[in-house]
Image (cartoon, rainbow, N blue to C red; front, side, top):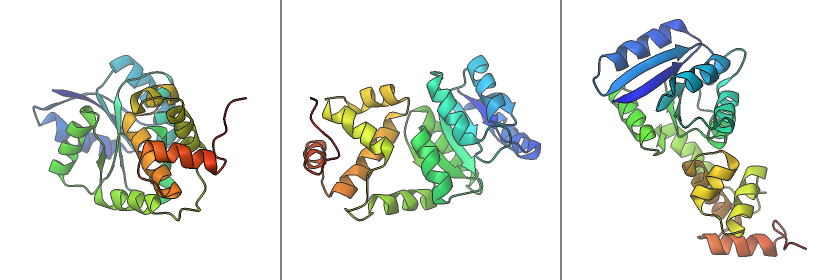
Length: 209
C-alpha cells in the first residue's frame, strides 16, 4: 500500500482525490494540505511515500515547497498534479526535484500508474510535459548551460555518480539525469566523458589551481 499526502489549495480537488485513492486498496491517504507551508509540516509529521503537489498556491507555492522538502531531507517522492504545463511551470518544478509531472485532466488509471511509478522513484510525465522537456533538450548547441546544469557537470567532472550528485544537490536522481541530457544536447555530445571534455574546452569548467 502506497501512502499519500494530497496538497492543493482547493478543498473540492482534495476531496475528489482523497475519495479516488481511498477507494483503491493500493493506496492510503495519510493527510491533506492547503498550501506548500502546510505540506512541509504535514510531510515531516506523516512521512508519506508520495506527495501529490499542486503548483500555484498561496503562502508557499509548489516549487518552493519541493525545494524545502529536499533541503529538509524528506524522502517522499513529489508528483506534481496541476492544470499548467507551460515552460515556466514545468522546468522549475523538475529542477526543484519533482519525480513526476501530471496534469489534472489525466485519466484515473494514468494517475494511479504515475503514483506507483513515483513511489518506485521513476519519472512520470504527462505527454505534453515530456514533449516540452524534449524540446528543451533539442536546444541549439550554442545555448548556455544553466547554473544547475553547471553544478551537476562539475560534480560529474569530479567523479560523482548520478546518485551522489543528487544527494549533494538535494534533488532526485531522475532530475540529475534530466540535467545531463540537457547538457549533452547543448554541448552536442552523447556521454559523460565527452560532456566533461567539451565543457573544459569551452571554458564552462576550469582545472583547480
